[in-house]
Length: 389
Image (cartoon, rainbow, N blue to C red; front, side, top):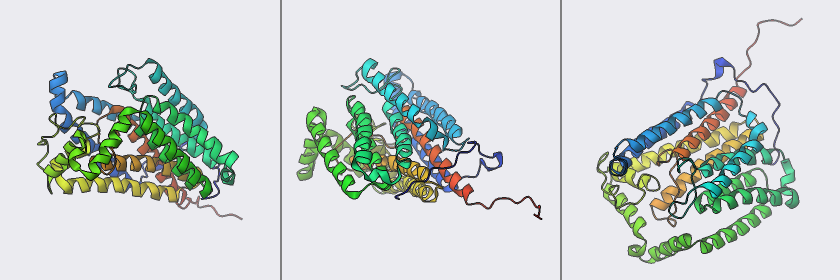
C-alpha cells in the first residue's frame, strides 16, 4: 500500500435501515470471546473473591460492569461513520497521554508499579493502545508516499511512538509499551515505508528494548529465568512451572469447568496473566485450540475488513486494531506456553481487567464498523424508478 486516499467528507451518519448490516462471522467471534471470558473470569475469581472480599461474585460483577461500559461504547462507535475519528484522533491521543501522566503523578504504587487511577480500577495504558492506533492510522494515511522520506516519515513517526511508549515504560509497563511499538511499526510498514527505514527502525527499537530490559531489574530477572529454563526446565521460574503444570494437567479434554487446582494459589494472577493456563486446565487441549480458533476468526475477519476498506485510513485502522488484538493474544499464549519470557500481558476479552475488557470491546466495535462500511460501499445503489429524458 503506497498511496493513501483521503475519504470524502460526509454527514457521518449511517442509514437506520443499514445499521444492522454486519459481518456476522466477526460479530460471532466477538460474542464468543466475551462469553468465554466471563466464564473464565468467574472460574478464576470466585475463590479469591470469597477470601479477599467476602463475596465470591465480587470480581465477576466488576467485569460485568466493564462489559456494560464496553457494550455502550460498542453501540456508540457503530452509530456513525468511523471516519469521524479522524477529526478527533489528536484530541483522543492527548487525553490518553494526559491520563497516563496523571497515573505517573498521582496513582499509588502497587507491587512496584503505578498503572491505575481510581483505586487501580482504571488503567490509562489500556486506552492508550486504541488511542495510538486511531492517531497513527490518521497520521500515516495523510502522508502518502512522503513517509518514504526519513525526515518526513521515520523521524517524526519514531518521535510520536517514542513519546507514547516512553511514558508507559515509566509506570513501568514494558509489555504494553512493546505491544504499542509492534503495532505502530507494523502500520508504518504496511502504509508504504521504505524497507530500509523499517529495518533501521527494527534495529533501533530492538536496541532500546534490550537496554530497557537491562535497566529494569524485574525484566532482567525474568529474562534470566527464561534463559535458564531453555537449558533446564526445572529452573524456568515458579510462574512458568505452574502454567506448564496447568497445561499438562488439562490433557486432551480438561478436568472440567471450575475444577482447576492451579487457580487455588499455586498459579499467581491466575485471573489476569494466567487465565489461558486455567482455561487449558479446565477444558484441555481441545478447548484451548477452540479458543485460539475463535481468536483466529476475529483476526481473519479483521484483515478481510482491511482489504475491503474503501480507503487507506479504513485499511490502516482495521489492520491496527486487528494486529493489536492478535499480537496481544499471541504474546499472552506464548508466555503461558513458555515460548517467550514471562511478562504481564492479559489475553484479550478473556483475562480479568475492566479497562482492558471494555477497551477491547470498543476496538472490536470500530473493526465491525469498518467491515460494515466496506460491505455497504460495494452494494448497488437503489434506483428511484425514474427515467431520464
